[in-house]
Image (cartoon, rainbow, N blue to C red; front, side, top):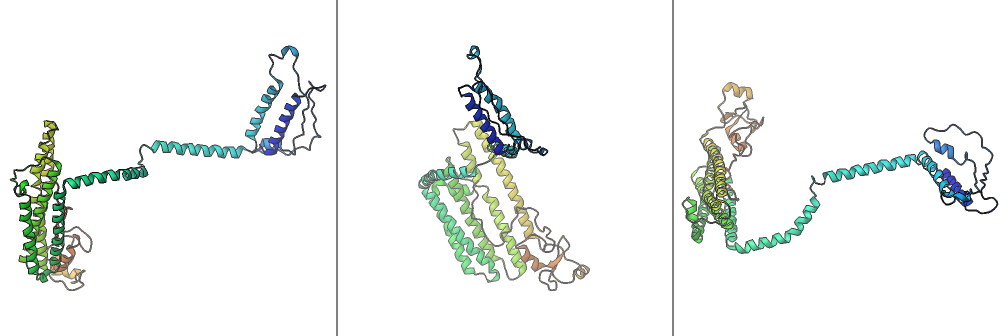
Length: 423
């Protein structure tokens, strides 16, 4: 309903109320004054019937100036005239308001309310399944000081062990960098530098064993130790220190390979890289053995856990350890097979080289020791050696070449992993 029509009806209602409250000779009469009828209105529109009916130009001016007084005998039980008249008029007003010009606005408001209600229902429905990252970040920020206090307590309690591990890791990192630099020099490697590195590494091994002789690190390395720690921190320390010592021994083996293996040709460099890779995988295979007795004793020594559960935990650890050990043994077999392999493929015939253009796709020169891969592409053997230091695929079609296991990695640069085997 439009605003002028609504205001006219409100004025009519207020005038009726005032007429009902008057006293005098005109009480009990209802006087209506209607203006001359306007010209016939145009046809009503389908969208706004009430607006066309109640517009100011078409509605008459109605004035009520009388009140109806009920008989004296029924004044106590009858409804007041003002209340009855207001109830009679309010119903049509509501219907007219629903049909008037406020219909589109009311529909839009109702649609917006429905959308808001659906959005709120969706939020409440997915609130349990979603993760509030902001609340999680606030919780972590509040808990960070307490975690720092616990970390300081752990460091102060195990100061000696943490200092020993940090020092050994730093020494291993420095030695690792120097060894990789000597490997990159190929035939120009320095024997004096390698010997100095070997002496420094060899001096740290007995130093660690003597400093921690009370924990029988040497016995644990050969699987014959008698000291079996029962606390978690002591077990972790014994495992980490023993694994670091074995990595020092692996560095000594790699230095020996660099000193003994020639590197005056590409074939020799490739063979030396295979030997370094094989040495690293053999080292990793043996490094998996010393932690097993320590962790087995740790699980078996937990008196607070029922005996059946302790047995189950120990057996489960041995099963998982055996699975990982056999996986590592398969990698060692692949490394040994790679060392025994003379070439990456077969020697192509003259017709095959002629069909390929008698030109290596890598060096763009005539073939030198041509090698045909399983995918059929032909390359120089030296070019393949350099390429396979970075990729284990065919340079042309990207077909996989070499060991099929994705866990097999090349350690031909002489590096030794810094992180220990914890379990």
